[in-house]
Length: 302
Image (cartoon, rainbow, N blue to C red):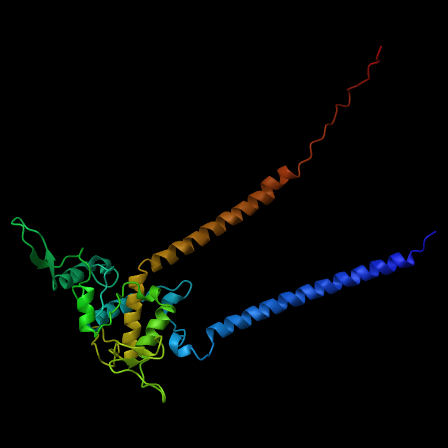
């Protein structure tokens, strides 16, 4: 008869190895999570020799539209469009925004129509086959500052001012980057030389940007009496540019909230139906109960 001692020892060894492998697995998972978190932190808060070439990472600013259920400040959009017209429109275009897009967002239809009529647009041909100038209409795009790219470069020492229609989506960091860039102008630190005609801004890749600082305290006068500090002016124009890039943001969040509420209700109804209706069908047992008076006798085979 064989002894059970070696078998029990082998079983205890297997159990110990299993516990050891489980502990090792959890330790490996914890190490992987910690390493991933450390890499993410270093990626977002890294300091390295090539940081000047990439530009500083912007801080996070409390724009209300950035939150999960936050929406645009439409009064800020109205003020931001004023800033764009008086400050930014001298160099930058807004090709994807038409006058009609501003109706019921920041202005009434009458206000937008009056603003559009202040500009003249080339149209035609007429009945004589000639082009003519006419006042702007709601269907016209926001006018460009330059007729073409060559004229824009010639007026800005070879630099092409970018179109601002999608600028908050076209730059890493979005609204935070644009705000940090517009408020980040400063004198270059010791040891940093900036070529003539450029301006130092640590948030711009390379640190030298052709656009000069254009936003200062009091550069515009708000009609609603809002303090016209540089930070407030920058916040308003960045909010307007964010709306220009994502005009559907408010409606998208509203539809998303409705969808979440609807699917939550449907999920609750589905769980109730499964538990109180379908569960009884799944666990049903069908059994045959013969009548008591049924005397069944097997027949004999001949």
